[in-house]
Length: 185
Image 1 (cartoon, one colour):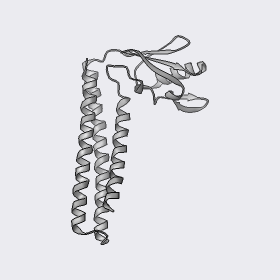
Image 2 (spheres, helix red, strand yellow):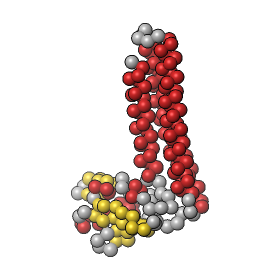
Image 3 (cartoon, helix red, strand yellow):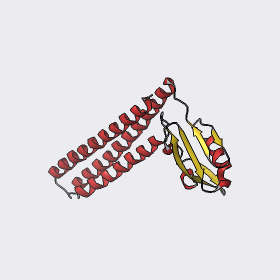
Image 4 (cartoon, helix red, strand yellow):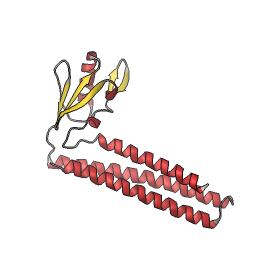
């Protein structure tokens, strides 16, 4: 019973970490990364569609993204979506592909991005704590309903804490890596 609860909690925590990782991909670093624009929604036949479904995104140079639409008629819509986004990038359209040149980040902008990363990391930590709290409540409910003994409850709580600590360490590692990536000149 506790093993199932721990597996469920681990699954939820892993999903939170995966969401954090995907979220951090959208934060700009000094290098071009397709993850920066993949999830950008483009108005396509009246419905918002992720850019990765409309075009191939490549990195021809370290500071440049090249977006090649599968359908040439979507060029204007993709360009409009990039301009409307908060990326701060100006698309260069040559009729076949869109090129995005990433300017060098200033020191102040890098510090702002690191603060933003820390904010996202804290949100992920809160999500993990909420998952732990719910699982702890379930363990205590199991004991109250006489489904498990007091010793099982204590063991379950200890295992849950170890799992949470392991996941928190993973979040810290992801955060350190992203911070290094941003501060790299």
